[in-house]
Figure 1 (cartoon, rainbow, N blue to C red):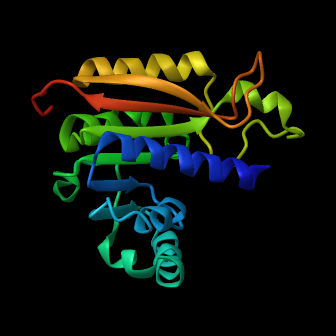
Figure 2: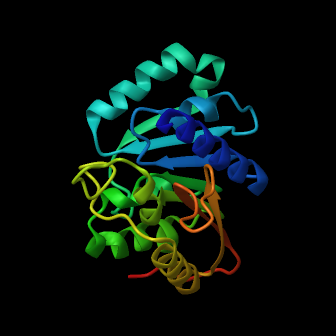
Length: 206
């Protein structure tokens, strides 16, 4: 089930990035390269950057791109760094993706993510996916509170919507929402997705 969900998640993110018309994309928190491999297979994405804090994850992504990326792997640059810090290397990209990433950040540091990504880097489109906490009732998780022990939080749909709408309003974006995976009539989908689209210029924050 989880592998099928991951495939659906990647397909939904790719569809959102393609619909944006972006030709340059940053995968923020790229991990071992699940999205990067798929981006490499899409010629429409001419410039691709994968950023992660973990050197081990980047090494794994590099191996996967060599084995699975084909000719498209040559369009991808991998960088070690944090998306919580303003970084001039992230400027100028038309789109960014944070796939199953924000829940690994301490909640009190989400404001740093907002400043670095939405206020400073300001890609025209930002796609964010994260687990839907409500759906966890359908998983046999035993006493585990979260789906992954490294998660710092998992939000219900309204909490995610409130956060995303606040980010959008403060930074000159509009935002739309979608669920990914089979939908439960009461609990929604396993994954929730927000797609931010820039609608106004905003002055960089200090």
